Image (cartoon, rainbow, N blue to C red; front, side, top):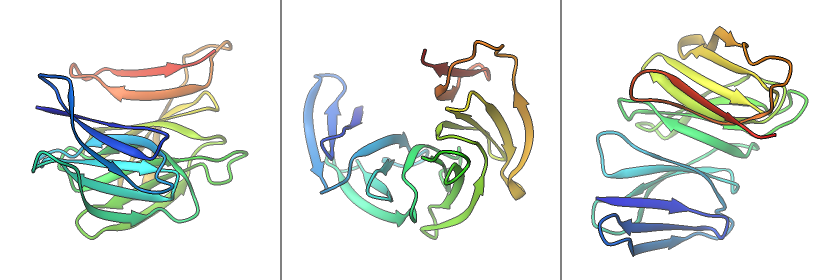
Length: 185
C-alpha cells in the first residue's frame, strides 16, 4: 500500500507504507497543496491547491501522474472530500465576511464545477461526505453545518459547542458513523 503527502513546497510525494520510503514525487509550480483525499474505487487522490485548481493524481503505476485538473475559479480551495462513489468532490473555499466562503461541488466524470454556494461567514476549513446525499462542513466562524447536496439546502446546524467555541480547522466522518471536528484555541 502507498501513502501520498502534499506540502507547501508545491510537491506531492508517494511513499511505500511498508518501508516508509519515498517512491515517487511530483512538483508543479505554485501548486501549494491545501488538501488531499483518496478517490474511492480507483488508485488516485484528489488534491486542492493555492493555484486555484483541483487535480486528480493517479498512483496506479507506483508513481504520481496527473490524470486531470479542474479550475476552481477565483477562490482558493482549503479542504475537500470525495463522494463515496468517487464521482464528486466537495470543497470549501477561503474567505472572510461571507465573501468567497463557499461550498463547491465538482463532477469528476465531466471535470467541471456543478455549483458554488455561499455557506459561512469565514473560511471553510473542513468538509466531509456523510453519505452520497449529505455533506458536513466546518468553518473558522465556529459553525458546523450539514447540507443536502441536491439544491445545497442546509439541513442542520450543529451548535452545542458553547460560548467558548474555537474556530474549527477540520472535520471527518468516523467509521462508526460519528462526526469528529477539531478546533484551535
